[in-house]
Image (cartoon, rainbow, N blue to C red):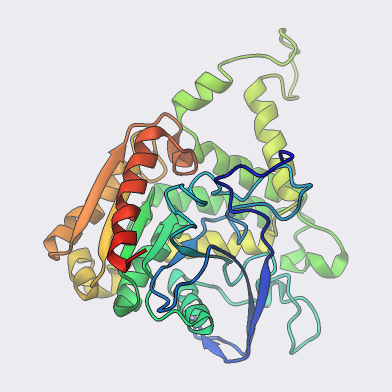
Length: 382
């Protein structure tokens, strides 16, 4: 971190752990008697609590979306490029709430948490979670914070699914849903990628049926492989080619199976780093939540019919080289919104970075995002 904070930084922020004693019924039929959520907030809630914005994270995300935890931090939060004074989600105007979802591994109740019924880590006994479950827990969070209606619910990728689900489950509790680099449901190919990742984890001898905590180990190789597979889908062919090409680490073939190409070395590094920071059981949960998300399922596969209950306005953004959740998937969502007679704005951003482009502040993306949220701010009088 620089010696002095940038003027557009959310500053030094402190996570908060909130305990919810009330039971929460889950889509799988199980009930959690109580749970904790870890959150961060940026900015100030105004008197009538009308300027609150909820940030929903993607698969490997967490509550630390902006600012720094201490003066020693080398990197800010994962969406710092978009959250802060003068940034698209302007913390001088909005009160921004970011959380680690239920089932996460960054402080919120999840598989690595202690099950009060057994005194041991939940492990594989932690119930399967859906996007709708997350939205219900986020509504409890809003109640705790005194927020009756969000000015906007915002998310990219899996976070965008949560923003969309908010518009269906609690249509009176948000003014705007901002759905970025997302999809109304996974394709068979996307489900297949998730299954390969899960199989890599569950096949690791150190997985022990999900009870690796009890043996003081982790399925490191499985997590590493899962992350490598996932990471490939987050990047575009063009961005990988520009960054690595066919460059060799030592400028000569070794005629072996070690990492010889720079892209191999990069993927191994990403996988190893991820395996040290993320929980395997949480990875399984998150990918299943992705697979199950399908708001049209209970409406006879009619997405427009499912959207009929929504009352908010929508901004949908896609990226030209995103082949994980292609622009065609966003257009499918937009067309269903139009058919349901909803107010929706849409932009496809030309960006070379694939699915990860939603994390990168390209000028066109920033302009569209800023302009829309500026209108949201004017609506709520901030």
